[in-house]
Amino acid sequence: MVLNLSKTHKNGTTSANLAAPMPAGPIVYREDGAIDWGNMWDSFCVLAQEGGPPHRGDLLEAPHKPDTTSEAYQFAVTEIARGIWEVAELTAVPATPGWLQILCQSESQARWLAEAIVDENVQARHEGSYLFVPVGDQFRLKKEIKNVITAVAKTSHYWQEHLAVEVKQALAFQDKILGIWRRLRNVIG
Image 1 (cartoon, rainbow, N blue to C red):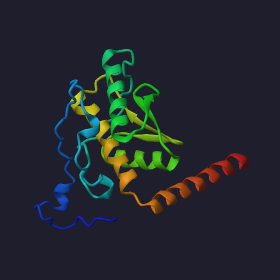
Image 2: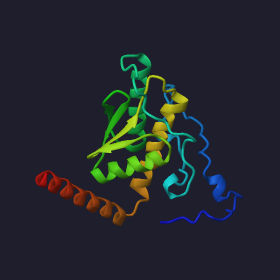
Image 3: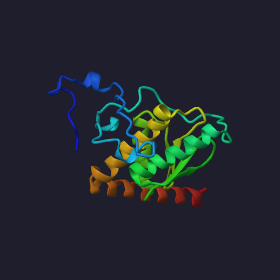
Image 4: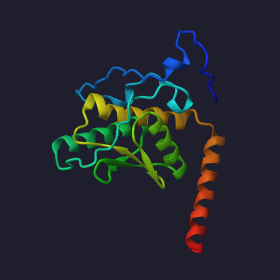
């Protein structure tokens, strides 16, 4: 589905102010005091790659040399992994310093999610069927931790609920062609 956002909408917004970052929603807590990541959103805005506002105003990047032994880093890893599980039922585990690794169902899903998350102004990348998102010892719960989880929530929701099967099939076909091309390049030298 392609949205035409080049006009004035019923609520008075125009294409010009749709580029502003998405406002943060309220944080919802469970009875035990932990954030209830799985029940924080009633709906999602249109993805940035579809013409909606990006989640952040500037790019959230993985830190270059995070203190992976610090309590703050371990908290960020645990909380982002928990949040990603609650919003997308994807398992996130520590990878190289500054990154969490998430196993996706396919290379095409990992690639699409990485591209969509970057459009939301959160750094992401993929390698094969793995999606990588940033984590750092300076990440704060109501800022960067929430930003990573929200970007994964928005994009994985769109992938699961709104992206047409034909688009997913085309992405998978592209990945097969790229795989054949890589193997041919290795054989040819």
